[in-house]
Image (cartoon, rainbow, N blue to C red; front, side):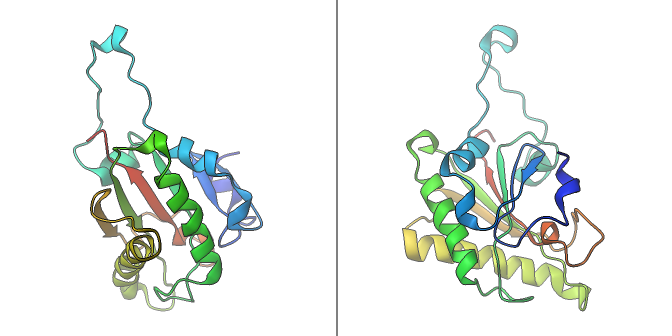
Length: 184
């Protein structure tokens, strides 16, 4: 199913995307820890064709993610309205994320948090709201799970610069992306 075709079926805490494919779920508990870990695992390096050199399409996580070069988990983390305050469902999604980030297969990886926000009633506020949401995700992961500066290399709010749908209510426009930057 194409990434963009599930927008009407997605619920706020249940969207999860791996490599351009999306699945929907009733809650954050419905996608597995293994799915999230697999989304964040770097692709293996085939040394026979490239002599151990791992090509990278871009010099930073933002452009590399947009080109599909870095492993990325795209989540809809529920916030209270157009704010940066996490809901209970949002916290449940972050609990699953924390477990994934602590998985032994991701040991030594570093990550960037990129928050997207679309606020149709006040478009100018999308960028500051997304920046506060990225910070809120980091604060929650640090405060509740002890995940912090040793694995997170950056947070970024990108506002409405990368909409997945023109539908203002589409949860795909309110996503949090966790990007494995270990290949940078």
